[in-house]
Length: 179
Image 1 (cartoon, rainbow, N blue to C red):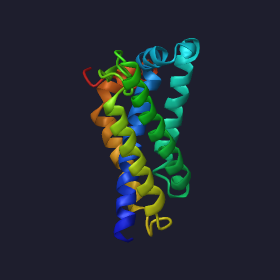
Image 2: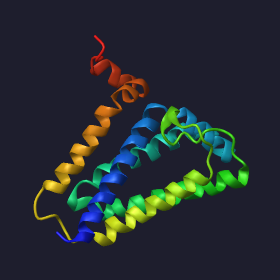
Image 3: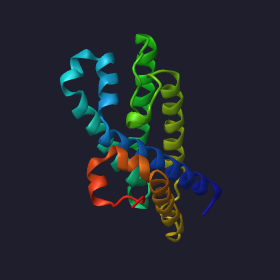
């Protein structure tokens, strides 16, 4: 495995962590992102929550796809498209002088669409380029994919309280640690 492959896997892991976290947060609390989208595109207001849940599902699938060697290239293309959409929403927010929180991470978001979204979208597009062009095929062994999946599990464990608070179905299935 060459150094570019290592950077590609690091970018894949980082992209997967961000997308899985933001996708799960939006699935659990689509309201803030739906309201922010409706403020920028009032015609989408009736279907804003559906659009947000669809984007969240795409984020989740893309994040998982980044961790599987055979699906990394299509996931990198989807990652680049999501980065462009996020940057575009940031530009739209700047032009519209958006005031509502963007909802990018569900109810945990507090900043409106703007410069942060532009920077995040740009960083995501760079990560997509690293994943797409830095690949040298499947890794020689499963260690990088295993490390990526363990990283995601660690993130889920660290943010388990937030996950329980935003996903009602998860609260019913997983017993509270405080009992």
